[in-house]
Image (cartoon, rainbow, N blue to C red; front, top):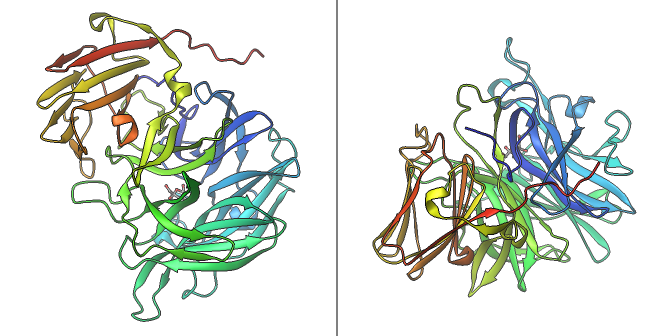
Amino acid sequence: MKRPRIHLTAPRNWLNDPVGFCVYRGEYHLFYQHFPYAPRWGTMHWGHAVSLDLAHWEQRPIALFPTCEDDKNGCFSGSAIECDGKLLLYYTGVRYNKTPPKDIHVAQNEDYVSCQMCLESADGKTFDNFSKKRVVIPTQSNPSIGHPTDTRDPKVWREKDWYYMLLGSRCQLAETGENAPELLLYRSADGMSWELHSRVAHKNLGFMWECPDLFRVNQRSVLSISPMRIGPAGSHPDLAMCGLITAEPSSGRFNLNDTKFKVIDAGLDYYAPQSTLDMQGRRIQIGWLRSPCPLPGMDWIGVISLPRVVSVRDGQICFSLHPNIKRLFRRQVTLSKANMEGPLLLRAEFPNDSRLDLGGLLLSFRDGIFTADRSKVFPCQPPYPSRLSIRISSGPCTAEIVVDSGVVEIYLNDGEAVLSTLVYSPSPCISGTGLTHLECLCESTIDAPYTD
Ligand code: FRU
């Protein structure tokens, strides 16, 4: 698979969650979970990239790496905010209790402890890993409140006079002693000394919730979570989900009882998303597009999705393609000249019983169900399913499809549903059957706006 051009990947080796996504000093900063030594997961660092427009990314040196006892085995996911002109990176430091004799980059039997840490950077360019880190929340010591291993991924924001930190965790339910995923909400006046403000557990949505994110959009509170061990049979067990909740951080009041969580991306490979406000004040989210394996010759693995604008329409959470990405595509090309290498933006309207063949990725719409069959272009060993489908509220179904080398993102009915997948070795051709509309645009310039 060739490297995508408008999707961020690591310069080499492994990438997973997007972290620390923010605007700071007029630039978008995006960090990512990174193992710089091999195309597999291992001791976590924070890779770093910056952008002026969310479409062209410039890699910067690795920002965070293990240096002290509390993060000696990894700097897990977290977030970034500006505070008094400085950039604060909040993350989970991990320390393994034991490693297998031949691999110091993983914990034996998942036996490790976590704590929440902060690194302060004066300018967003230099990150002094040796003297600017501190532990802000120590390892959980009471399992009925939070788990010493599985408490992680601080999402920090400021509201009125307080800083809030949301953590994913799990606990033992007092009534039954059973394990339940939960959220811990901490509060701080200065961003450094934190107190537990409230917590809420959920009885039946996975084992623990990773990468929680809570934000307001269209006067509603949206919770985005990555529950572990929740996926439907035949899919990856860990899936990113979202739902509308009642939440009032100032009083610590949370209500998840009436929430219907839905899978964010029907491709089932989108995980650990994180949001921020863009420079125009839109709530935008990006996630990790995970994939089973690098192909021979690929020295990298893991893709960050395109930014998606989050909105709530008719009580539904929608994820639409960001206008900065749409704006890249201004030149119409005839289908016979279009190539799956891209980048391309296709606009299509699928009436009932219509199809689009994207280099072997077979898209179809029938009886209200949109399906992507990737069996010809994806190494579909379990848990990666070959057929992905999603019910659409009403037809015909309109689609905006971005093709960027090995990545395809499909936005249906302006974000009512999204389906993203990686495609390995697609054929170059694109053809439609029964579509009422199909147009293809390529970017007119891909030059980065950086001049240095
Ligand atoms: C989600 C996750 C996070 C964790 C990080 C480690 O993919 O498991 O919970 O902080 O990845 O890389």
